[in-house]
Length: 576
Image (cartoon, rainbow, N blue to C red; front, side, top):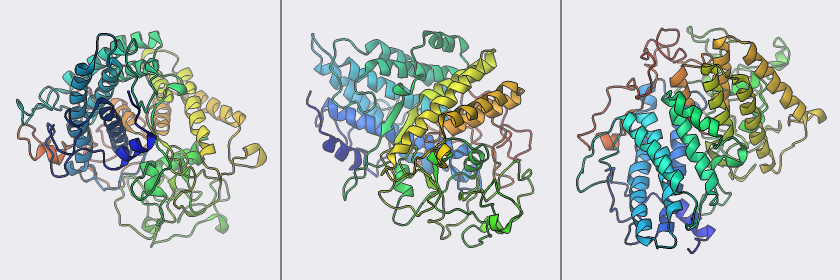
């Protein structure tokens, strides 16, 4: 097979590669003239298209989950407005209009091109794995979805939904089929952007995705079978990520989407989560300077240095009603004390927004905290307190984390905690692997001061990291069940920075951590147990009835109903 050169791949990647008409929303569209088709494309072009769309899907869905569990900031006062049906048209189209149509055509093309001596089983297996992940993720977010009637325009122009449980079963079967196809006497993929044709790693991914599905469905027996085999993602070398590039010109922007949003000539366009920044600051988390880059050293209404004298006027940041309106406002009556829950202003110059704050856009783009060197390849925070700009830091050559080894160890800790195993050791491994990966990104910022804390610098030493992990592990080991689940939940959120899908599932499965910042609005409505169906689909397909609200639970969610009464109610989850 002739390899596509890298510039051609990037052109395909960034000059749309949606292969869909802007005006067409039917999920079973196959013959859009802008799409790759059997008639005008080849298998390798399909593989590029499918892999790129998959990365976009994982990035977008992960951001939805991140906003719900405070990894990222949710900028609407209630859950219904934050996740209106129109907001997920893009993700739904990536899955059904793009990926599933392309996979259907590409698998047929691969089978047609096989010979007696060599075949395309590796291509087919990879497509099955990507489709399985996508199907499982769609069920996790939307519940019942079209599967058996989807992408069959001739017989089912308006497909009905299949039960979420049946789609899960189908996806797990796809993963098993993929494992049996991988390797052997088959063509390599011309451009395998994830594992570079290391099909042992693709097998590990398939096993890992099955394990994650078994956690959601509480299938302990099948989970333990795969765990005991040991052939899953457990080491950073097997991490499943999408890599971005620094390339940018009039036609191409291959940088991380988060970098594109935060490192602009006009400043930072997003807000970071006050909850996550405050949590990592107060815990002195070793990953903090890698996740966040501060443009200023003093957030209105907060302390300049959390370790300084709170009564010293020089350590107190003046309120700023123009740039941070809430800095002049009293704490919401429903919030517990300041030591238990941050409100509005995070100390040490971390400038973000609270969960559910939907205020206007003040002139603060050169004050807001930006994404750091991990995972978007921005700036490492070495107290330079300078304004962001195009090309700074790692130039956007970051990643979308889709499945990391540290997440597997968090999964093992959760299952061990419920089954009586050594959860503390798994948690220790998860934290160590996560911190090591995050710290490896520091070198992406060529201008960063990466001197260690022993030298008065900013990079924690190995000893400091070990001590921090020991302390967290000890707190976990000595705590009661609630303490353990809160620590596990907090570490789950922190390790999943960059992709909140698994954390959204964890929160609905367990209700932890209870320490999440409450929504600023006293009555934000019940927590999102599943998203509305996308407007493009629900408004045009009479066989898909739009949900009455976001309280409809997915099939594996057996927890009590959410309450619209807000935090402190008896509804689930407690933090809402």
